[in-house]
Amino acid sequence: MTVWVIAGLLAMATGVRIGWALVNKQSLVSTAMVVALGSLAVIAALNWHPLTLLLDSALLWPNISVALSQVALVACAAGSCVMITTAAASRPTAVVRRVAVLQYGVAVVIAALTLVLFFAEEKQPEMAPQEYLSRNLATPHLSMMWLLPLLYVMLALTLVTWGGLRHSSRSRRGRALFVFTVGIVLILLTIAFLLIQAFGASGLVGIGTAATLLGTAMTVVALGSLLPTVEDWFTGRHELRLIEPLLAELERRQPDIGIGVRPRGPLVFRVAERLSLISDALFLEATSTRGAASSALHGSGSPALPPQEQARAIAEWIRAGNDGNDVFPGLGALRQPDTYSDREWIIEIARQYRALERASG
Image 1 (cartoon, rainbow, N blue to C red):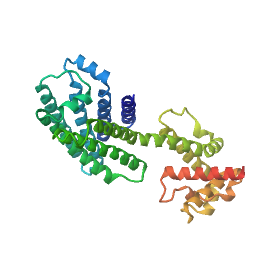
Image 2: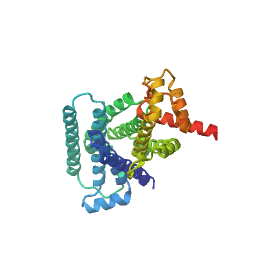
Image 3: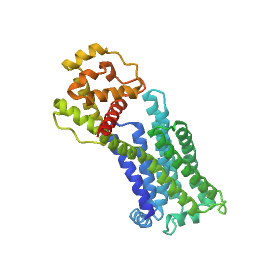
């Protein structure tokens, strides 16, 4: 059950990345994220014993799911490495793309050699993946088969860890990158445990410890990948409730802004569309006949007010209704301060408008 929960989280994170890539322009970072998360989901699924038996029987080779898990781990390391190096790159797009292709090429070679070494070994009786690792990882004739992919994964994920920690921040994406990097660090610890086993020091750690740590790591990676989507959803719902009173009032005054069918899509897009309607309605109100005359008295330059007071002045003007010309702060007041983006400015106006409504109600 635990394996399928982990696989489900990773599959959900992969699906979210695929959906985002389809809605937005496809990029190397999105593709790399899909490769990394999808590979981890495959590893989690292959550790479910009934699926392992089914796959081994279908491919007519016992324990082949272990080799495929190694290949998936190499693919995860390659995707994560391409993601972090591409996101941090400052070189031209063509150069970044060539570097990404080179990274994928190295991973393909490592994966192919891993499969060759696996098939070169004698067939063994069918067994669960954890039992297979316990019996074979520390034996001398299998150490080289494990050493090559594990060293590659360790080197690649070390680079991912360095880049992830360097680019983590307090922003929404930065927090998600930090959680993702923590999961990568846990995978690195798992690889270290497996390398210890491969070198014959089986008394220090057990395969069960490594398997538990890998499951925890995959869960953390999935949560880090889903964190921006979850935060976007909750933030979008909050922003929709926040801007609803201001939008309803402006739509009542400027009904033309609501003409047409509003497309249904991701919540972030719906919030952006409503913010755009508010922005259009504010400027239509401001440039109306009586508003334009008032703006000439108040000037069109940006007022020397703190941003919150400036937003409150606009909210009071909207609240004043037909008598708003007397308190119109000027066209310049509608322009966002330098410290605010367009989106943040409209939301701040909506926040002040809602605060006024609550105070009066």
